[in-house]
Image (cartoon, rainbow, N blue to C red):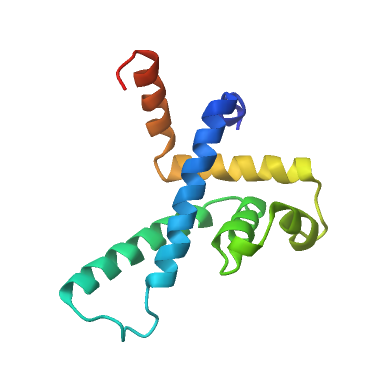
Length: 138
């Protein structure tokens, strides 16, 4: 993870925000997908439903490729139904067994987010945007 650790604070923040945004979208899509299929009313609903399912599968596949601790952290903190009510503190103190320190949690979280950004194709986007900004082509 040497490449991930070498990124500047601004780049890290942008990656974290992008991945967190995708994970929030995942939770919303997961909520919108009917489990019984009864809320499907039109072909538009079917197309939209398939887009939601495809997006959710993409996120789930990326998360499944993470190492165990990173996968556990992402699922507990970002993919659960009660995610909006769970804090980082609760995850590293109450969910990990044995509990881990805040510093360890931060390292695991960063590595998980960076790996997800690579798996989901976001990292190259950030590099391209940085080059464009540096060359005044925003």
